[in-house]
Length: 281
Image (cartoon, rainbow, N blue to C red; front, side, top):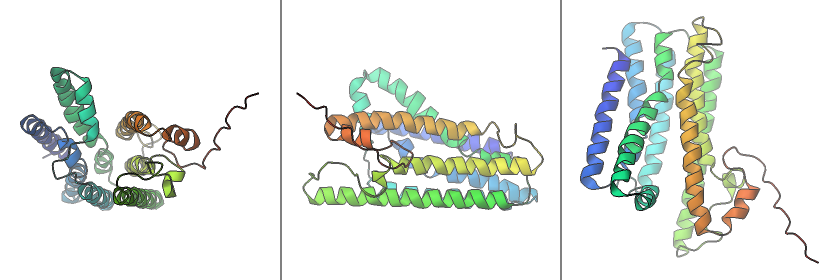
C-alpha cells in the first residue's frame, strides 16, 4: 500500500476515535493525548516503506528515530503532568464556558479534532518527500539532525525548569511570587518550550528538503517545497495558543504584564530593560 494512503487511513481512524471519545466522556483533550504518539507512527510508516522499496532508507530511518525521541520526551512530560489520567486542558473548559453548547461542539469537531489531527499529518510529510526522493545522507542531514537534537534538549530543559517551579509552588501552598516561572530559560523567553517544539519541526522539514535537493531538485520544489505548510501552520497554531494562554495568565497575575514587556514571547533573546515609571511633578 502507498504509505501516504496508509497514513491518511490511520489519521481518519484517529479522528473518529478522538471525536467519539470526546462525545462519550465530555472531555475534549483526546487529541492532546495522542499528539505525541501518532506523528512517530506516521514517520515510521514512511520509513518502513522506504526500507521495503530497497532504496537507501538511511535518511528516513534517521527522521523516524528523531521523531521517536521527540515522542518519548513529550509523552513522558505529558504523563507526569497527569495528561493520561482524565485531566482536560483548562483552556478547553474556558472556551466551553464562552460558547453555547452547539457552538462548542462545532469547534470541537472542526478545530480540536479535524484541524489538529490534520496538522499532525502535515508536520510529518517531509518524510513523504524523503521517501519520494531517496538519496544518500550528506552533511546537511547531519547538521539538521544535530539541530533537531539540540532543540529537543532545549525543550527538555525548559519543561524540567517549569516542572520544578510548579513543584516548588505546590510545596509553598500554591503561592510563589510572582506566580509564574521567570528564571533559567524563562528569563530569555516566556515560552522557551514552545519555541523549541516548533524549531524541531522546522529542522524536520529541512531534512525532507535536503532529500529533495540531493535528488536534483532546486530551490522551488526542493529546498522550498509544499510540505513547509506543516511547520508553518504549527507555528501559527502555537502563536494563537500562546496569545490565548497569556490572556488567561495576565488576568490572573498582575505582574505578568511587566514580564511580557521585559521578555521575548517565544524566541530566546536577552531580557529588555523595564520601562521606567513616568515621573510626576
